[in-house]
Length: 251
Image (cartoon, rainbow, N blue to C red; front, side, top):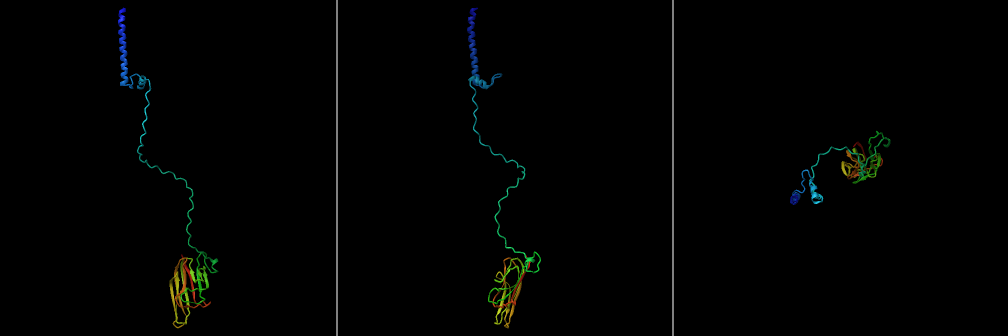
């Protein structure tokens, strides 16, 4: 019996060593071939690795940031929003140009007692020639009888329109004869002749040069009578030579 135990113990020890070596080889092969693979009913791969090496697995490294993608297509247009409140008042604009010179309406209170309807425009003048004139000059009718609106100036002999419209104008100039010459008298508007008249001294007597015109005048236009040769008789206060006009239809 003792002999049998002596023989069996070395065999068991040798077999135990062989079995341990077998399991050690199997563990090494599993770690090399499949170190992280899970075992059925066993630990996970991380646990196996931690068990095998004694250290936890390294963390995963983060890669670099990629390039931005292409912009997407525009979306659909949204509905119109509600109107906002009014904005603040803007600064004053630049000052405009001056307007044209106006005129004062003449009423019954400003027509020197003449009958007139309230609010209507009244312009009229009637003047006579006191002093004689000759040659080529503007006749200065210096005897003012009527000057409604005060648009006629006796110092220049010119009527200056201040109310645009249609006017009736007439003149009568007495020629001073006795020397066999003739006299011409023209109605002028701004330097242009609008009517002419002639008086001839055929028999060495006095003669008249007369004419009339209906003209449209704008504000600022000048009307006057000018000699174009010859002699005009003055007549002191007798008013042999006269110049007159009045507005028919204002604009």
